[in-house]
Amino acid sequence: MVQLKRVLVVCLAFAGALVLAELFVRYLVHYPLYGVSERVYGMRAPGISSNVFSPYSENWSVEGGNRVYRRNNLGLTGVDISVSAGTKHVFVLGDSYIQSYEVAPESMATSRLYKHLSERYTDWSVVNLGRSGFDPYDSFYRSVYFESTLLPSAVFLVVAEGNLGLLAHRKHPLLFPSSIAHRTDSSLFIRIHHYARNNSSLINLIARVAYENQAFFNENNEEDVAAEAKPRGSSLVGDSLVMNAMFQCVDQFNGRYGKRFVLISIARAQDLNRSLREYCSLKHVAFESMSINEARFKIGRVGHLNSEGQNTLGDLLYDSFAKHIAEQSR
Image (cartoon, rainbow, N blue to C red):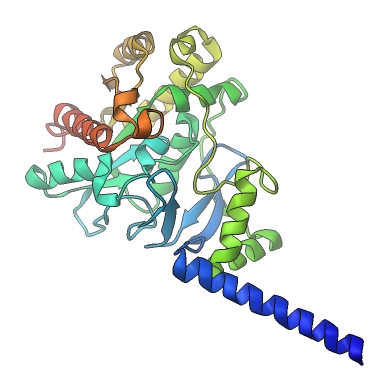
């Protein structure tokens, strides 16, 4: 009987400690819940699932100064997106430079693009489809997935050394099926995983720390921020597998969207930009470039884009729209 009481006391103390820890993490630290509604196959390269976030869910930004930012009405980063009839949409695809978890939604490059558009092209809205760790191959699948929600009137793919370098890890040549099937991962593990992290900030934090230390998660179980390839600079031009894979992606985007597609490079390697420009010219694909992937445009000179970098990229996106999309959309 005494032993039973001791066990009961220990259990109650443990439960109480968990409750206090949850209250501390959620209400004092303000660490958010997971915010994932489902995990879907077909939103990125074959065999890898991707998270779908709930509208107005939140994310924690370490690089942004340990701040909590809220996603928009579609569960994406950036300002709210108009879904009313007659609205035209610009899809902006890329990696974490486009996703921009590090800054407030209104300060993102895509939000600056939207601000410019709202002053002159009031029937246009901007859809930020950037995703950390996504290469151009992933981005094609992501664009096709979101077509079921919003039909794009323009598609911008933003590339730099980082997301192009990820193509080196692919099986070559890349495979592009004639149709892309989408299915939700409804396995028991995923359902338990989502339930726990969507209802406990403490569990979400523990799981995130475990992921960062690569304890429990592999590359097929993506988090808010995935690992990205280190920039390889001009050596990419000499990597025929990477460049051929990139050219394959350009062909697929061009074949699907035609004159609605614009490739934008923010790489600092000029030989890389020159190679992309030459290929796009050959294929009659709109192309723009500006060396934004530089220290002066980055947080702490080494991280993601700072406010100057975001503004510069936003202006480049708008200039690309005005040059290649505006006239043909009238």
